[in-house]
Amino acid sequence: MSKYVDKVADSLDRQILFNMPLRKAIILFSTLLFVIIAIGSSFAYYFAMQKVLNENLAQELRQVLNLKQYSLKAKLDKEALLLKVLSERSFIKKYLLDPDDENAKENGFAMFNQYEEYFQSKMLGWVSLKDSNYHVNGQFMEKYSDSNPKHSWFFEALKNKYPPAIKVDFDYLNRQIYDLYLNYPVYSEGEAIGAITGRISLFEFISTLDLPEKVLVFDKNGVVIGAADVKIAKEKKTLKELFGNSGEEVHMRALAMDKNSSEAFILDGSQFVLNSMETLDLFLVAKDEVNFKKIMEERASIIFFILLMLMLLVVVIFNKFITNILRPINKHMTSYIESSLLDELTKLPNKRFYNMRIEDEWNRAVRGKYPLSFLMMDLDKFKVYNDTHGHLEGDRLLREVARVFSYCVNRNSDFAARFGGEEFCVVLPNTNLEGAKKIAENIRSSMERTGKATISIGMICKVPGLDDNMQEFIDLADQKLYEAKNTGRNKVCW
Image (cartoon, rainbow, N blue to C red):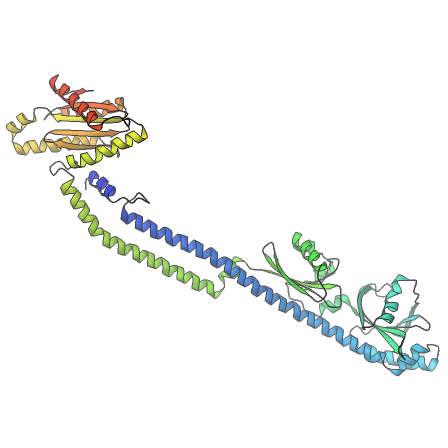
C-alpha cells in the first residue's frame, strides 16, 4: 500500500486525545486503564490488608501478653495465698508476739519450716516488731531499724492495708540477685506485730513463663529481664540496644502508662503491643511486623491476583474484539482513499488530496513561523511523446515520474501530487530555499537520466504570515514554472 494511503488513513483516523489511529487509541486506552486500575487497586489492597493484618496482629499480641500476664498473676496469687494462710496461724502469731519464749519460738520455726516447701523458691523470711530480728529459713540475718533505707519494706508492709506488698529488690545479704518479694503483715487483735516475706528469683520467675520469641519483659529502667533468648536477659540488654530509637520510644510510653493497662502502636513499620503489670513495675512488650511476604501469604491475596488476571484476560479479549471490528472498517477506509484521493495511474495523491494537504501545511507554517517550499512541475513536450510512442508509453512515463518522486521526496512531512495531466507538484514543509533547490535539482536530473523525458520546475519558498495569501503563493510557483518553460525547459526557476 502506498505511503500516502497510510498517511491519509492515519489522518482520517486521528483522535483528538491521543493523536493516533482509533484502533491504536482504543488498545492503548484500555491497556492504560487496566494498568491504572491494577496499580491503584494493588496499592489500595496492600494498605488495606496491612491495616487489617496490623489490627489482627495487635489483637494476637495482646492475647499473648494477657496470657503471660495472667500466668504471672496466678503464680503471685499462689504465693500470696500461702503467706495469708501462714499469717493467720496461731503459732506464728504467738511467736511474733513473744520471740523470746522458747516454746513459741520452737513452734513458730517448725511452722515456717513446714511451709517453706510450698513456696517456689523455698525461701521464707520474717521479722517480729518485738525484737526486729530478720530471719530467713530459720537463720538470723540482721536486726532491722527504721533508720536503714534497706529495711523500709518491713515498715511499709506493717502499714499496708491491702496485702501483700509486692516489690523487686536486691538481696544484698546472701544471694546477691534481684528477687521478687511478697511481704505480708501479721496482725494480732487488729495490731501489726510483724511481717513474713516470700521471695522468688526474678530471673527464674520470668523464665518459667516460657515467653514466645516476640515477647520481652522489662523493668522501669528499660532493661530486659525476660526473653525467649535467655542470653538477652543475662546480659541485661536494654530496649534501645534491641530496637534502636523505637526501643527508647517504647520505654517512654511504658513509663507513662497506668498500672494494668495496654497499648498498641506502630513504630518504624513494626507493630508493638505494650502491657503494664498491675502490682509490679514490670512491663511486657510484643513486637512483630506486617511485611510484603505476610500479605502475599494471605488467601485473599491469591483471590485478588486471580481477579487481576481475569481482568487482564477481559482486556485482551476486548482488544481482539475491537481489532476484528475495526479491520473491515479500516479496509473500507483504505479502499476509499485509494479510489478517491489517489491518482489511479501513478498512485500519487490527486488534486483533491493536494487541496486538503496544502491548506494544512500552509496553516502549520503560519503558526510555526517556518519556511514552506512549493515546486510546480511539468513534463517537457509530453504531448509529442504521447503522440509519438502511444498512450501506453505515455502512461509508463507518468509512472516513471512517480518513481522519481519516491526517491527524491522521502521525508515523512513532504509529499508529491499529480496536479493534472502531466503537471505535478511537491510540497516541502519546513524547508528553506537552499534545501528546496537541492530537491528540485535532484528531481530534474533524475528525470533527465531516464532518457525518456525532461521536466521543468518552478519553485517558491516563503515563511508565510497571517496577512499572506496561499493562492498567491501557489500562483508565484506557477509563474516560475512558465519562466522555466519559456527559457529553454529542463531547468529550475525560482
